[in-house]
Picture 1 (spheres, helix red, strand yellow):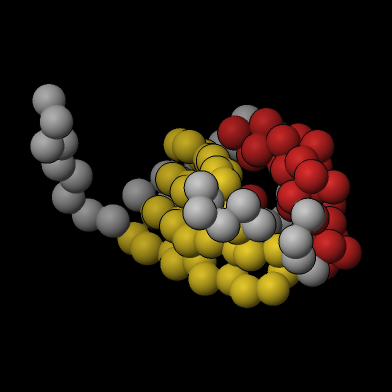
Picture 2 (spheres, one colour):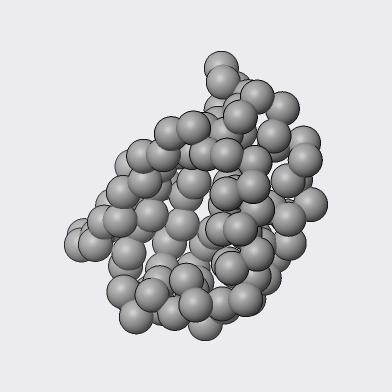
Length: 101
């Protein structure tokens, strides 16, 4: 499994301007083959920061994701509002454990 985890900070107030595109990106991505889960959240302490959490079946599925039309729209939109900083990690995971069952 491939895990994508991180954050992206945008210009103050930009998230309200891009919320609709963000929602459409999430909905379209969740339908992609190889997508296990795809979520954006908002940092409670910093409301201009998007928290990214994604799970993919393979590197190939993730690579294909970046070629999708909805991703072109999303990347263009982020460019228009301005990403101030970004820290996103792409990790291949091995063993999975559940500590809360």
